[in-house]
Length: 267
Image (cartoon, rainbow, N blue to C red; front, side):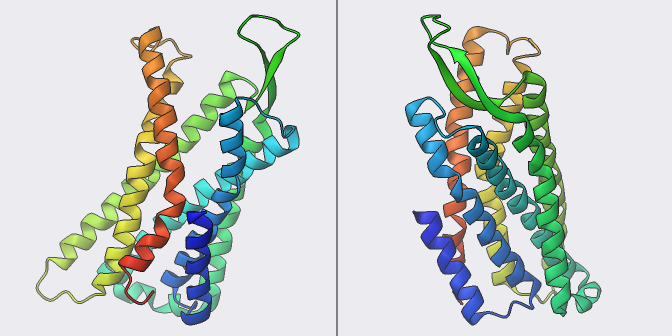
């Protein structure tokens, strides 16, 4: 509810009052769309984890996984692009003169969405409805789960998320170090509110997704039987960390609008 209302308001403000020829505004608009796309899958995941079984069928399993990862990858890439754009505007301002043209906004946004679709497709293909016997071992009474069809594809899905997150972490960290170094110069002149907005969005992204990415990486070591992660007690702790960090990560979609409101005074 927070995500739908908040991101819808951000979209309305941007479309009604802001100049979308600005790359920053275009990226903020696409980031809000990414959060809304991500939000579509949350009620299905909530019902799935409350009931403990998948009851929506295999097409819905694939579709919800696709929607979830499109939202995840697109928000990651848009945050990277926003940070790089702000880095170029602050540190190398002469290189972004042509970015005022409308077709730059449309072209860059289209490329990012296409990349997100491509990155999310394997998750949709290799997730399916699988059945597991119940706790009492009765094979005739099996539970249905929306999961990867085998461990290998699960590991591929985990490591793909980790790679995207590492690329985002390295790129954004480098850009902000350079931006801060530039701002420390006495002659620096730039829009501090815009930098502060993007910086807060990025910090919230890292605080939300960093524990989750660490958890899925540690979880991926369990099938490899790497000590001490093959120990039952340790793997149980990792499972708890994974479930809690996932809840925190999923909540990021409703936080960005609050930063638009409280930090960007124009909103």
